Length: 128
Image 1 (spheres, rainbow, N blue to C red):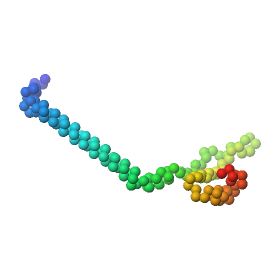
Image 2 (tube, one colour; image 1 turned 45 degrees about the vertical axis):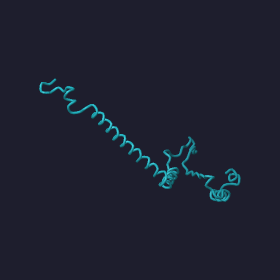
Image 3 (cartoon, rainbow, N blue to C red; image 1 turned 30 degrees about the vertical axis):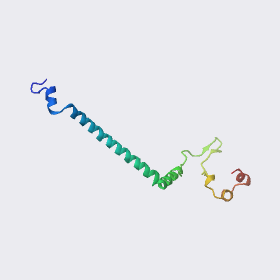
Image 4 (cartoon, rainbow, N blue to C red; image 1 turned 180 degrees about the vertical axis):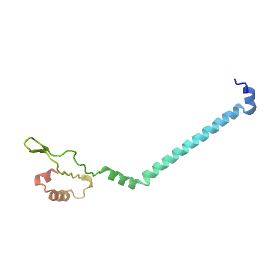
């Protein structure tokens, strides 16, 4: 021990705090920490409930707009030609139309209109 430091003994500790006081301070700390954790849990549960009940429409709209992603991705290459100059692969625009059967009010009319817009044959329209 250092020469100027006084060594604590059981008698000096007992004079200031008893064993019961130490146990009570531990119990108080436990209750305070538990109350803080419980309040954080209640706040998180309340926020989850608010998002689930009050803001349902907003998040449904965000998820729908996130599901459909329209982006133009240009190809990284040019035309690929064989040794005679005949194109093997060329760059051209391709488009895709997606239909969700459950969201169609009149499927027959929709297919007819698509057939007219896309110049589909009767066989291609039947395959739809």
